Image 1 (cartoon, rainbow, N blue to C red):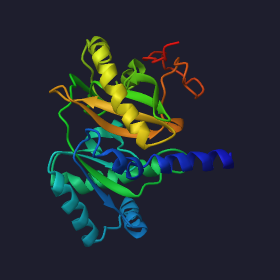
Image 2: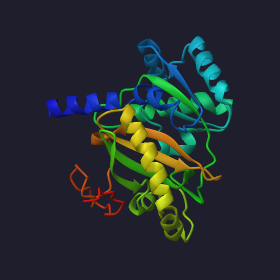
Image 3: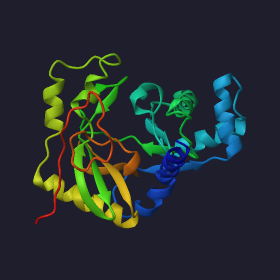
Length: 265
C-alpha cells in the first residue's frame, strides 16, 4: 500500500495546474487565469480557518487582489481541483463578499478528499465561462457540453463525454433535475466529425508539450468555442467503464460508453 500511495501522490503532484498550464497557455485556448502561489505557512493559515482561527489580513488582501484581476463572477480552484460538485459553496464565486468563505470551503474539500487529503500549492482564479449548459446539477453546477480526451505520449488514445448519465443521476439529492434531463444530456454528449478533429488536434498539442499519459478536459462555450479547462495524469483520472483503454478496475453503478479513437490498420 505504501508504494502504491507514494506512486499516486507523485502522479497527483504531476497533475498540478502549475506544472502543465504554463506549457500550453500560449498554444491553446484556456480561460483567463491568475495563479496565486502560496507558502506552506499561508496554506496552513487557511487550514486553521477550519478551526476558527482568522487568516492573516495580509493573506486575505493577497487573495482579494488576485481575484480582482479576473473580476466577478469567477471560477475558483486550486492547482489540484475545484470541488465542483459543491458548486455554489466552492468554485462559483459570485462576488467579493463570497470569496473568502468559498476559499475556506475549497480548503475543506481538499482536506476531505481521498484517504489523507489532496495536497495543493496555489489558488487559481479563472474567468467564468458562459458554457453550453442547458440545465444544472450538484448544487447549481452547469451541466455543459464537455469532453475528456486521453493522450499518451502525444497521441490521442480515446475520448469520452465528460458527464456519464449515472454521474448526473447521483445529483438528485443536491439539485432538482428537469424531467427531460436524460434527453438533454444525450444531446450534449453527441459528437460529430468536426468536433473530434478539432479536439484531437488540441489534445495532441497538449500531449506534445506534456509527455506521458494524460486526461485533457474541454468545454464548449455558448458561442461555440472549445476551451481547454483542465488536465491530469491519466493514471489518476476517471475513465468511462467499458472503454478498452480504461486501465482501472470497473467502478460500480457506472455504465459503459464513450468514444474510442482507433488508428487505421
